[in-house]
Image (cartoon, rainbow, N blue to C red; front, side, top):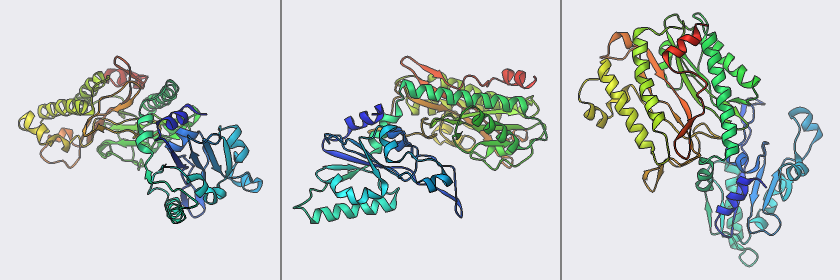
Length: 429
């Protein structure tokens, strides 16, 4: 049994069961589908990477604590869409105590739920399964002489989010590999970019390296924003030419065995920063470096956000992007005109990973084993009013993946440079 599944069982309420469905396939157009990506919670607990599956977890059962309902083997269908584990594979390769065709799940549901106090299940994601579960509970309650229906349905995310937040040594190893692949791809982008190329050429180079290195896919839509496109936070069109004298902001991460990296670097298309670009970049780099150095146990997101906001606000005043008193500007969040997002997020199986940012309404201290991103930025739109002309159309973000250790931190993405001199030296070769 997977370590994660055993720990999930340990944390479940006594007398409870869990129903955890796989992610559905997503239609791309007509009868074609997007490449399948498993639900993160389901994958975390089972390691099973096929659609149309349901995990049933019953810690109190003497023999069948972990059951999988899966697609049966079907030679004709497998000819078209690939091999299936089937019922036998679910037991032999994925450790299920029992396995059945997924078509039998609903007919077994009353038997599975009978006597449980609580059902861990996330409502609102799988409408057909929601309906089946609620209907079955209602029917069981009308047949109380035969069945004892559960009293409540509880979202398993409260348990799974806390479990997924703190990474095991094995997970950290996978995340380090994802970070290394991502860092190598960013280095290739810096070494190969030239004026006249298109943004999508950099995207293609990066994603080719991901796949060549064993990453299943990008962890999210790759952002390659040249010039003023860098001031659009989630720009993924990537179809504009890269012009001599512009910066290009590249936000790209690899997904390796389910785990994500998330890296942003901003660098000059021609290999040399202009004076205005250097001024904005140095302001962001100073804030990013300071926030990375702060990462350690007991530090909170509020601590990191406050440091980034103060340092960037002071820089915006110095550069003439803002005017006024530093404390008042911070209190009124005026800096958000040029720094619109938080300083980072949790990272893991999801790019914006599971886990609560506050506990009992208070900022959450970081714990050893947590992985975070640190990614301040300054974005000056090309039509921004009341700012020095030399900064218009400049967007800079710098992002690293940082592991919280017992006494500090480790930067997982340190293999890609971020200092101005380092970047210019790399790009000159």
